[in-house]
Image 1 (cartoon, helix red, strand yellow):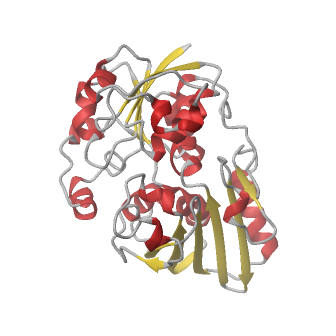
Image 2 (image 1 turned 90 degrees about the vertical axis):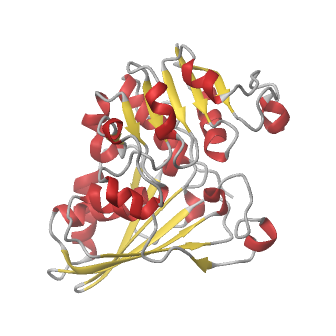
Length: 336
């Protein structure tokens, strides 16, 4: 059994990790940190876990320095870079924040608004989009888990970029659920404000844009990315609008995506436009497309707390530790 800790275990990302790790047969969840709830029983904060977990929240320092095999960091942006230097180098670290996703410190500061203070350590991190970097993740001890928007868009565009199908600008229209804003409410995430709202935010400056461009590996790609807040609780729904170099049919597009993703356990091709509710509470990504000559729309949808965060983190842990990749992630989406 591998001993596991979660730094930042009281937020929604940490909670989703708890859900997944409790059913993982090859790990034991031993430590959870929360500075705000230190000393409090986990079940007091999350009563739905009664009878399933017998742990109290520890301090961040206790969790980081404990004798563990695996450490998940589910901390706010800017905190992981302070913590990682204190983590033993032989420990597997999976970071769910944005601290180590971007290799260029100047780009990082432009999008996150503060400097990347651990530039040397950043080079040790592998970008953990499992379907693209699986071979590198197998040998990694430091994994930067991708952002939710980035996961949806990279998987949607990767085959097109690799095969040179894109002519001109790609327009990305992406929507997210409220759980992506975290557990602590703000002016725009508080339920009375959010429940019936639909609005854009961070035009041209969302922090997931540079990791999308860096991972796609085409610095000349023209990308207009606009996220929107929706009344959903869970879900990312991304539409990608572009012109192709040559005219393509629906069959051409399906063949391309099947060539790249057939055999991937968590990517599903749909002949109909996808729906965010059909991937909720799962690690699946649904992809679909529509064509009209040179015009192509590619849709992708995923659960932002699973494949967009904790599920992908567990998937990366499985690969890095040599476990079957789908372990603890086999559950079907929940509907209705």
